[in-house]
Length: 180
Image 1 (spheres, helix red, strand yellow):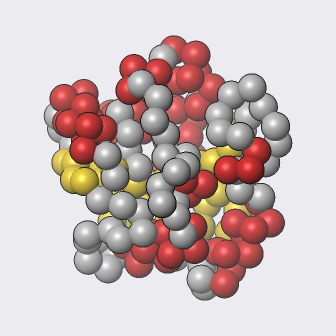
Image 2 (cartoon, one colour; image 1 turned 90 degrees about the horizontal axis):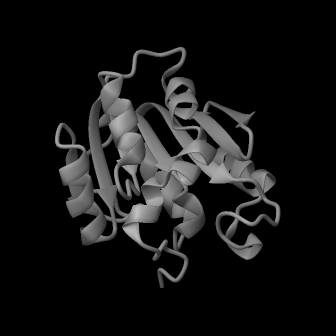
């Protein structure tokens, strides 16, 4: 279990090269676009990079991560947010607790991606946004066998009953927007 979880150094999560590749400001803007998002759950928050971006936009942020060391780092780097240790397959919040549930490079690491997406939908009032690697071999990110195929992710979202789905192609990544 959990063999796909990111295990490299925490410092690498905030390296300038990685931050640029992730297009953090653009992703934040796209996630918040077209709706009044006042609260966000950052699932698999890691070092809090996206949590920090959402907080800068005035959104109340809560982050969860399976690794306690990530939670401790996030608390130091993003003191205005709340952080808890939890897994994506078992989110410890009530139904519809957050306007937006955001997963940044987490779904491909889940032991059960469908259960993870089900939990995110349960906790979201309006939208679930999933940032993932494109399904292609690259020199950056996880190996191909850990990446998700778009058609599989969209099929899962349809099966779970999201009202609408959209895929936004970024420079090197894909942002999935699922309306609850």
